[in-house]
Amino acid sequence: MSLLIVYIFSVIVGQSVSITVGLLVDRYFSSYTGLMVFIAMYFVVFWLAWRFSVRVTAPKSPRPQGGLAPGKAFTAALDGLVGA
Image (tube, rainbow, N blue to C red; front, side):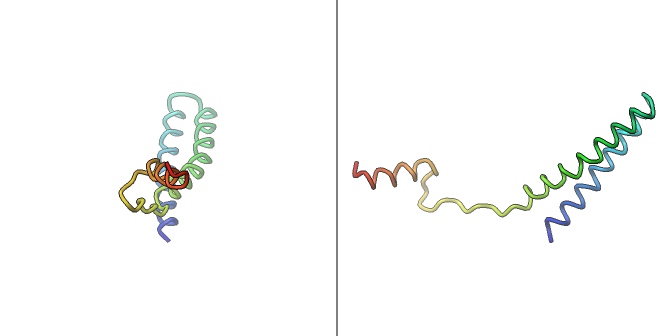
Protein backbone atom coordinates (compact mmCIF):
# COMPACT_ATOMS: atom_id res chain seq x y z
CA MET A 1 0.00 0.00 0.00
CA SER A 2 2.84 2.38 0.76
CA LEU A 3 4.30 1.75 -2.70
CA LEU A 4 1.09 2.96 -4.33
CA ILE A 5 0.89 6.04 -2.11
CA VAL A 6 4.50 7.03 -2.80
CA TYR A 7 3.98 6.42 -6.54
CA ILE A 8 0.86 8.57 -6.77
CA PHE A 9 2.49 11.37 -4.78
CA SER A 10 5.59 11.19 -7.00
CA VAL A 11 3.50 11.31 -10.17
CA ILE A 12 1.54 14.33 -8.94
CA VAL A 13 4.72 16.22 -8.10
CA GLY A 14 6.43 15.19 -11.33
CA GLN A 15 3.48 16.10 -13.53
CA SER A 16 3.26 19.49 -11.84
CA VAL A 17 6.87 20.10 -12.75
CA SER A 18 6.35 18.92 -16.34
CA ILE A 19 3.32 21.21 -16.78
CA THR A 20 5.28 24.17 -15.40
CA VAL A 21 8.29 23.51 -17.62
CA GLY A 22 6.05 22.95 -20.66
CA LEU A 23 4.24 26.25 -20.07
CA LEU A 24 7.53 28.12 -19.60
CA VAL A 25 8.95 26.71 -22.81
CA ASP A 26 5.65 27.56 -24.54
CA ARG A 27 5.91 31.15 -23.37
CA TYR A 28 9.55 31.77 -24.37
CA PHE A 29 9.72 29.57 -27.48
CA SER A 30 7.08 28.22 -29.84
CA SER A 31 3.96 26.35 -28.73
CA TYR A 32 5.13 23.31 -30.71
CA THR A 33 8.38 23.17 -28.72
CA GLY A 34 6.48 23.55 -25.46
CA LEU A 35 4.17 20.69 -26.42
CA MET A 36 7.07 18.41 -27.35
CA VAL A 37 8.87 19.18 -24.08
CA PHE A 38 5.70 18.52 -22.10
CA ILE A 39 4.94 15.21 -23.85
CA ALA A 40 8.50 13.97 -23.35
CA MET A 41 8.47 14.90 -19.67
CA TYR A 42 4.94 13.49 -19.25
CA PHE A 43 6.06 9.96 -20.12
CA VAL A 44 9.42 10.17 -18.37
CA VAL A 45 7.71 11.18 -15.10
CA PHE A 46 5.78 7.89 -14.94
CA TRP A 47 8.98 5.87 -15.35
CA LEU A 48 11.00 7.94 -12.88
CA ALA A 49 8.19 7.96 -10.32
CA TRP A 50 7.98 4.16 -10.45
CA ARG A 51 11.75 3.75 -10.06
CA PHE A 52 11.79 6.22 -7.16
CA SER A 53 8.81 4.58 -5.44
CA VAL A 54 10.28 1.09 -5.65
CA ARG A 55 13.61 2.28 -4.30
CA VAL A 56 12.07 4.23 -1.42
CA THR A 57 9.71 1.45 -0.31
CA ALA A 58 12.12 -1.46 -0.77
CA PRO A 59 12.66 -3.49 2.40
CA LYS A 60 15.97 -2.79 4.07
CA SER A 61 18.40 -5.69 4.21
CA PRO A 62 19.54 -6.66 7.72
CA ARG A 63 23.09 -5.88 8.77
CA PRO A 64 25.45 -8.86 8.89
CA GLN A 65 25.74 -10.51 12.30
CA GLY A 66 29.03 -10.77 14.14
CA GLY A 67 30.20 -7.24 13.52
CA LEU A 68 32.25 -8.09 10.42
CA ALA A 69 32.03 -6.04 7.27
CA PRO A 70 30.69 -7.98 4.25
CA GLY A 71 34.13 -8.30 2.61
CA LYS A 72 35.77 -9.37 5.87
CA ALA A 73 33.07 -11.98 6.53
CA PHE A 74 33.76 -13.62 3.17
CA THR A 75 37.52 -13.57 3.78
CA ALA A 76 37.08 -15.06 7.26
CA ALA A 77 34.83 -17.83 5.90
CA LEU A 78 37.31 -18.58 3.10
CA ASP A 79 40.21 -18.74 5.59
CA GLY A 80 38.20 -21.20 7.67
CA LEU A 81 37.64 -23.46 4.67
CA VAL A 82 41.24 -23.38 3.50
CA GLY A 83 42.67 -23.74 6.99
CA ALA A 84 45.00 -20.78 6.79
